Image 1 (tube, rainbow, N blue to C red):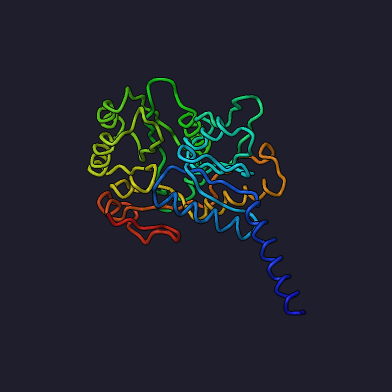
Image 2 (cartoon, rainbow, N blue to C red; image 1 turned 60 degrees about the vertical axis):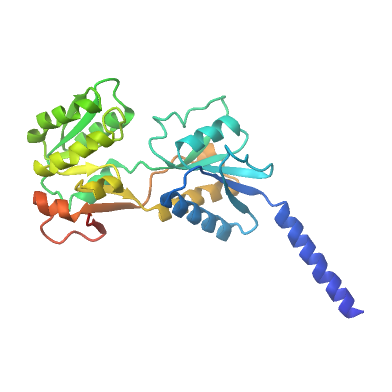
Length: 303
């Protein structure tokens, strides 16, 4: 009799646990990218949330293929496209985005219907952080050049210029009438600057311009502060980039605050807490910088 009661009790507990699992709230990571960096970020988000909130189901979906489930309590869209989708299609849910560059300029922080509130972790590494990371490699830089679109100036170019000037640098902005104008503008500006600072602007940079820019700057012994790892691997001197595992942890920490009752409107957008300095050693040797041992925390790119 006691064994029967015991078996019944175990079975009841198992059913109860199964029921709770089936009806637990879900956190939906929205992603349509098949890329290693996204995979690392997603894995980190899932691990951090499940450790902090064991009863929460964390799933990853492409909402253009399969909509979020009805029990979703929070959306974590990765990238600009997914964040825009979440704002338009699920304004009823709190949104914590990640892997978004320039969310303000992209319009993602604007309310689309007067009530949608979003927050998250952007990919925008502060200028001060970038300068702090590169000074050990380029201590003598005084004049920085930026190629900007000759049309309407972007928030990014204005912010970059203003913050670099506030740090004591002379900034030369060279208006550029599109990617086809980059070679001519580079030739005009190269002799007047100590560092070329790339900013994200499709009206200035594309694959073709970068293929010209990097060999030209190496030949001219002009350091390039690139946008990301791919540019550094292609031959740019250096870049301050992201640790995607740490980004996942940071996004998850913000999501956990929302799950615990915080309002997204009360959580300001955060910048990455970790900034990696990438240095192309071959380029450094060719243009004559960083001849001494690089500072701690520098990842050497050998390509």
